[in-house]
Structures are given as structure tokens and as C-alpha cells.
Image (spheres, rainbow, N blue to C red):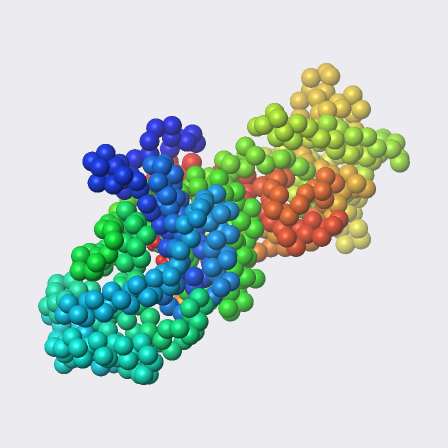
Length: 559
Ligand code: ATP
Ligand code: MG
């Protein structure tokens, strides 16, 4: 796999179908849709579906609709609808004028239900959900017919209208398709099309007290919108015969085709709105947009660029077989993008004071530092240098082991973009903790190179103590301690108690204070970061997006 975008046409089994359908004239234009249920925030799994549906529409000059699949009024909220729109836009996709809701079609769907009843293809069943379930049969045994299965059309119509009029309690009756109780596919054993639910709907209010099931609403919504290729995840494969049966037996204006692909699973996290909701509701994360969450709003806050997510979706590809993706691949896509685009800055997470004894007291100067070695157009900036500095505490060892090349007593190292310094003395407090290093610098090495050509092994990042800005830095580890949360116990038990570490006394180069929330940067040697919305003037709060070390190549070579 290379880092370059494929210059040729993308190939996968869905794009092949679309290409064939356009070439054969079966369709003049491809129309896809992304159909979220507004019962939670979108997650990285949805990115795959969004990138596929909008991507195909874009590549083949068609269009992609955003359709809210809002057939279940109980779990849906307006907040989710707005968040989903924001997330899709942020990913870089545009539905144009094509924003729809399954609830827009309630009246049409109802009329088509009456059509089925009049055709003798649907009936009102007075049994409870439990009774109906008990009669469904199994994979090896046929189901049993409901005592109401042979009810006449006229009686069914009267009852269905009474259901709509609100004359019955929740669950008292349902409308079922009359297909085949002995069908090998259980979805064809007289599936429920409508249930009674006296609940207010975010869009239709109290106009309805019967609601269509997903199976009934989805394909018909596709047909109404002239969707050509209805792409969904594999768990709907067994529903396809029902999807086709309904399209065939109803006077719908078009014939969409359902095609299934494998959903994205990501190791070390959970991707289900129900589970993510539980994390939020139980306060195990700070909210849907907690930067540890696999939600789109969470990874946005964490600093993942949308281009990296689109690239990740392409790398993952589409296939028919379920698999689990290593998060290292996602991080690889994020690093590749940020390496190109993120400005470099210096900052110290665990400050250790350095006093340059031969640097004049009260003096300071500015040194030229490159903003992004990968992007000459990003220019340079000036970084203040003075007598008192901070370096990373971990970059010094009083008694260095053999392979430790950084600062140690008597040793010379380079300060990035500045000078070579040598450690002369270690100052400790009464408890023996190191509080300060007394060093000297070589004024002839300004910029970092010695005129006599002598070499040093290490280059350290640093900040000027007087000029640095104090910051809070939030460091993240995976949300779960194992790749398969819940494999052996309740999945919340596998939450990683160390998934967030807050560094409250970080010191950053002053220019970081000028960045706005959402801006991304690299702190040299520490990783990529993003300014959190919790930042205040003069007090930046940074999320570490990802560290610098890329483990993907290792994983890939092993695989
Ligand atoms: P969840 O299980 O997280 O609630 P869902 O499938 O119920 O997901 P929907 O809002 O119904 O969520 O999904 C909208 C679209 O996104 C559907 O077409 C669905 O198939 C697709 N989708 C959901 N999860 C994934 C995933 N992990 N990988 C790929 N596509 C997904
Ligand atoms: Mg769902």
C-alpha cells in the first residue's frame, strides 16, 4: 500500500456494479444515499459508509442523498440530526438540495400499506409481539400461521384505519405482510410492517400513532428518491428478499437495488451507538465529543483531519467479508496527512530548568525556526532564546545508561535551531530531586552547527522560560485495554483507566498561544496536537492527536 492516492479508477465490487450499470444503460445516473438513524452521533464506522456513498456519487457524476431514517420516534432527537449534518459536512461531503427524512414519506407509505391490504398481501394481526415471535419458527422449522392471517381485506382495511386513528393501545395490533410462513428466510415469514406507538415524533409530532418498520420504510424511501444503488452493511443481506418483495408488489416509481458490504470494525474500541451512548450516559467519558471516543465529533476534537479519514476509508476498501481493522492504519493515515500540513512548534511537557551560565543576564535573542520541513511554503518563525530555558526532564540523566545519548553531566547536545550546550552542574533540592541544570553554551554554534565540525549525538527541544506560555496538555491512550472489549466480560470492564493523562504544567513556545481552537500542530519529538475548545486566552489546552511513532509499517509487514 503506498501513500499516493490512486490515479486510476478505484476498483471494488460495488464500483464495478455501478460502472456496468452505467455502461449497459441500465441507469443514466447513479444515485446513492447515506441513511443514518438519528439516535446517536456518527462514528468512524459511518465514515466508511459516507465515503462510499458520497464517493461513488462524486466519481460517477451522480448524486448522494442524506436521508434520516427517522421511523422510530422513541430514541430520536433533534440534537442528533444537527450533529450528523455537521459531521457529514466536516468530512467534506455535500448532499446539495437532497436532504430527506423517511418521515417525509409517512403518508405515501401508509397508502402503499392499504394497497397491500387491498391486494390481499397484508393483514392486521391481533396477537402480541411475543405471540408472533413464538410462531416464527426456526431455521429448520417453518413458522405457524396467525389465526388472523385469513382475515378479509375489508376487515383489514377497517382495522388498519382504526389503528391509524388511535383506537388501540400500543402493541395491541400490528400490520403484517402476507408472504410465506414456511419460507426458508425468516424475514419472509409475514414480517411486521407497522406497529402502534403512541409517541411524539420530532418531525411529525402527534400526527401518527402507527410507525412503519425499518424493512418496510427503507426500500420504499429508496424507490421514492430514485436511488439506484442502496448500499448497506452485511447484516441486511438476509433482508434483501423482503426488500425486493416489497418493491415488486408496490406501485413504486423506481426499482432500487440493495447491495451489501462489510461494516468497519476497529480493534480496541466499540462502534455501536447504543454502546457509545452508554459511555456518555454513565459519565465514563466527558461526552460524545470526548477525544477518546470513536465518534466523528470526538476524533475531530482530537485533531484528526477530515482528509485523513477519507484516505483511511479508501485504504480500508470495500469487501464482502467482515474483518477488524487495526487502529494503527487509521493513525498512519492521520500522521501522513499531518506530516504534510501541521506546523512545527516546540513545547516541553515535563519542564526541567536549564540555566546557561555564560549567557548574559537579562539578554534574549530570536532564532529562525522552520515551520514545516515538508512544506517549504509554510515559511519560518522566530523563537525566543534566553539565559533560562526548559528542556524535557526525560532528556537528562545524571547517570546515563549506554544507549542514552541525550544530556548528561559533562556532555554536549544541540538545542534545536539554537546552540550547542554542555551540562556543567546538577542542582538538587534537599530531597535529592534535580531542580536545575547549570550549562554553558558555545556562541559560535548559533543555528545549531559547530564551525569546527564537531558532532553531537542528540538534538533536544526547549523553550525560553521567560517567554513560554503555560498550557494544559491531554494525552490519550486507547479507550480499552484489549483489542476485543467484552470478549470475556461486560465490555465496560475493559475500559482503560489510564486512557487520559492530563499534564497541567506544560510550557510551550509563545506562538502556540496565538492558535485558535481546532488548529493543529506538531510539537517536535512529542507528537501532533490540536487546540481544544477548552483553551482560554493565554492558556492553551492541547489534545495529543497521535504520537510521532508510526507502528503501521510494522503491523503491515507482520500481517
Ligand atoms: P450502530 O450499530 O452504530 O447504531 P447503525 O447501523 O445502527 O449503527 P445507522 O444510523 O442505522 O447506524 O447507519 C447508517 C448507515 O451507516 C447504514 O447504512 C449503516 O449500514 C452504515 N454503518 C453503520 N455502522 C457502520 C460500520 N461500522 N461500517 C460501515 N457502515 C456502517
Ligand atoms: Mg441502527
